[in-house]
Image (cartoon, rainbow over all chains, first blue to last red; front, side, top):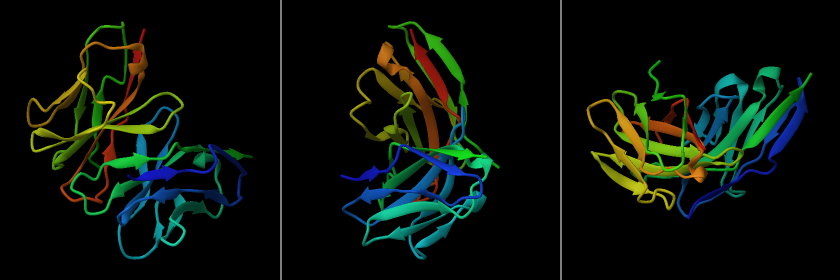
Amino acid sequence: AQSVTQLGSHVSVSEGALVLLRCNYSSSVPPYLFWYVQYPNQGLQLLLKYTTGATLVKGINGFEAEFKKSETSFHLTKPSAHMSDAAEYFCAVSEHGGSQGNLIFGKGTKLSVKP
Amino acid sequence: EPEVTQTPSHQVTQMGQEVILRCVPISNHLYFYWYRQILGQKVEFLVSFYNNEISEKSEIFDDQFSVERPDGSNFTLKIRSTKLEDSAMYFCASRTDRAGNTIYFGEGSWLTVV
């Protein structure tokens, strides 16, 4: 069975500081990995995804994530936090090649950005 | 940009009542999903729907739940007899026919059962 673990339910950074949100996954098959962001009172928006190919993927709003198979990780980073990045971030995995593509989500990490 | 739309955005219902949540997936998508998020908890998969039938469902999706695609555009989630613990944000989602393609989520429907 697949699972996702996000370390840290809350992360607080100062504006301009590095953002690092951790995600580790468990999967018996090569995974497809996703990061979604949820702003207050809004739905889930895709930030970026890894399917195949380059292990460093770039997404919207300056975020990127690196798939590290040896570490079963897919951590999300942004070099310089902005106030507008304050939101909840969800890492998700779906079964590679599966016709369903159902997503298994982590518990989420709430990012706060201090001025 | 095409989007998944959901109605209502918020519904308050009494325990035991039936609720129907409606969704219009993106028009060329073939897979449809319902997820839910209980306040403060993670997003949980409920059910996936393809080719006019349920393709997979989770343990949460018991006999109280049903889904339907009554016409070419709408995709509904019915909760037959709501319980307090059904209070949650329900997300509809859709994607095209290939695994790994992005699953697009709607804005969600807040259900409050009192």
